[in-house]
Image (tube, rainbow, N blue to C red; front, side, top):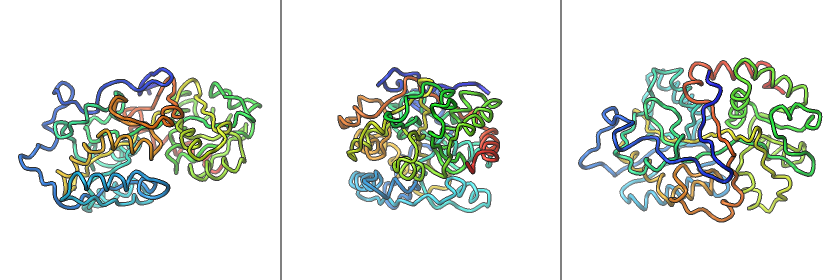
Length: 372
């Protein structure tokens, strides 16, 4: 595998570079594989959008704002949120394998790993439609590197986060490298997540694969285990449970943690951000239109709407993630600018490296470490 695929090598506080997932100049994409633009698009009816629970429920989620604003912009349309089943994208993979029609129009919350699962289990390029860039004017504003590597142009990023460490500086020093976490100073310090059941848990696992290679990552995890790493089932259990209850001084989380902590009035000494090897693992979230979508025209309008200035700002601040589009288009609160940290170097394991490998890597890890 290639040891590293760069999402963007950026300076402290900088943004990812310019460009888009899909181009409109005809140089990098072939719109002949996408949906032709109709002369009179049908912008009436119900748009069913599948997404994860925290997008539509909880403390100040982005979903209700998006619904109200979209319906105001398209008064003959109704946006209906559909909560993602427990199986995630696997639910829709199973439906497609069984020949069932998928009722939803848009999937909102895809990551690279989901896309790989689709193509590893279905005919490559399946489940979602190839997108026509000419129908999504704002797609050209998406940051360089957030295309998720999809060779079939099915997905557009709408935000991105960086997996990092969050630690209590009154108890431990900022670890500079992955190897530091195996030293006695960090014995019984780290809380991680199960890579089988948690997005940040899987992202952290892939980060270690990026750092040590597919032949070395399990040895590294054995060293972590010897030093007392604890892998809990999901992010909520590890962060809101163990970490916020001060069971341990360090947790795998997001580099925007201080935004949330500051808003809650928490002591920021326990919410310091650690970038191992001066890196953060980029984890963009994307949106795609199902092949079986009934409201295709409305779906295209929704994708374009999500990339608008106001929508990008609301999603970033309510999701506590970074916008997908360039900074000059999005006006964020001062607190976000102050407390949201961008790693000096952003890395990810790309689509091509994940294809045919992801399930095996996770399964091999789980056999030894899932119950830690």
